[in-house]
Image (cartoon, rainbow, N blue to C red; front, top):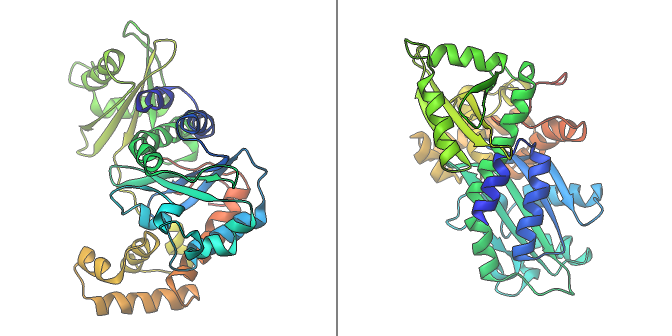
Length: 357
């Protein structure tokens, strides 16, 4: 199934089409009654877009789910799964056969006809790009440990597929993303067929003295003869690092996407809206990813008392009293409107530029 998902990721589709195809493939192997596939903003672990399968979406249920997700401790929170060795787990097994131990089950799931819930996060290179929530009704069996293991095993290729699709979307509308990705399209014989405007710019920075774009051609060749998706880093003449992503299309052509290798960080929008300092922004990023105070202190090489001081300032600036409230306020204030308006998630987290950004 990993190979099939990798081939799907290489197709010139968007994240919605990829999720539809991935849902059909993974559902066939695991089995569930309905599911939700989401794209995730890596620095904040907040959902940028959700697709619901095999059930009619209910905005009231979605709103309550997010309230419960941000409201405090519970079983299989997405931030916890993102830090777990196995990033997929079922509610029934996590509660040792007593799902009522979960507040989410007591408040919502048992009233909406759910017997069991399997949650997963999709990570690659330490960053989360997507999430799955699959449900089984009382007429179905609960999820097994083998189901969780299988979904965990496909997690990385799903994450890479989602980001690859987002990159393709950004290539098609480069004006919506500063310094966005570029595209070089090769024929199955290795001849360059097309280069996007942004692709021309990146090529000018990585061409060898003879102008042969050796690195790009190497990626195209490896993709053509090897895996469905190939990614390598390359240093530009400016000293900055670029990433080259090669993917093979169903027609035999090869697309090489070139992008700047940038660090993912909590969006500047959050800092501007709430007036956070650079250090407060970093602490906020850690909070949204579910890090406890001790681990934040160790990661930032500051004392736990300093972390608490930053938390106090962040809470005052955002008008909240807890970490859960902080996540909820940021999600409602900065993400919900864009999700409802259909804004396109970015391959770097947040959204492609639109009139509200």
